Image 1 (cartoon, rainbow, N blue to C red):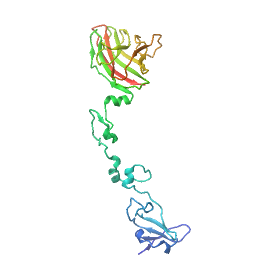
Image 2: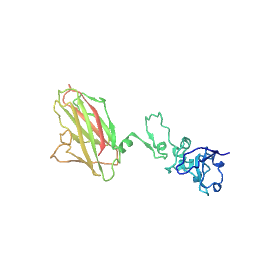
Image 3: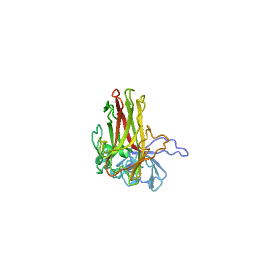
Image 4: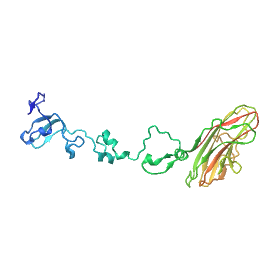
Length: 295
């Protein structure tokens, strides 16, 4: 049974005929020029008929005498389309998203706490090995970033190692590269002088066989909060920078001294070692901060 409803249509007095759904429409050849309204859709909604599916949506249909014309509507992608991950003009339902192979092998990281290595196999769906703290920071431009909060307190006049930073093997290509180190230390009083030094060694925490690459010289008694910074260049063979005997606190200065240079083996692990030397037993000092990064 068909029911007529009143509708204002500009330029015509005809009104659409209401039917239950697409299956209730007559043959378009028998009602040319007529509008029909389907009250409900029919078929699988994720694949409309104009894409080869079975779905006919609810709404207005017009007979051109041969076929039924209607306005296409947005539609949902089927599971295969979602899994392919290349379509950008179809909708995604919660179910096809949940079932998608695009999520296969991905780790559920909700509430996770990382205390060791991060496995790349679950994060990238390929087994690329474990990323360590050093390798991640190296890719970000840092070999290592460390903050020591009074972890080593110096209260002796003997030169004391207060920290070291690993420069991993093969951190540079054969063409070389550049890095900058920054150190910040605090002296608790102003009785005697303080001296900062930086060394490069293939052994951590040992300056016996290390090569000094920077020193501040003995700073004034009032020097309590002191930065220590150098930029170093590696040309593939040698490490060079401001004169290794320069007493400058930083290399942001004009210096007429001879450039410092030493052979640097990039194929093995190297360590940047920081030391503090006090001139008075009445003083205490400690490393507050140290970092090394590419630039």
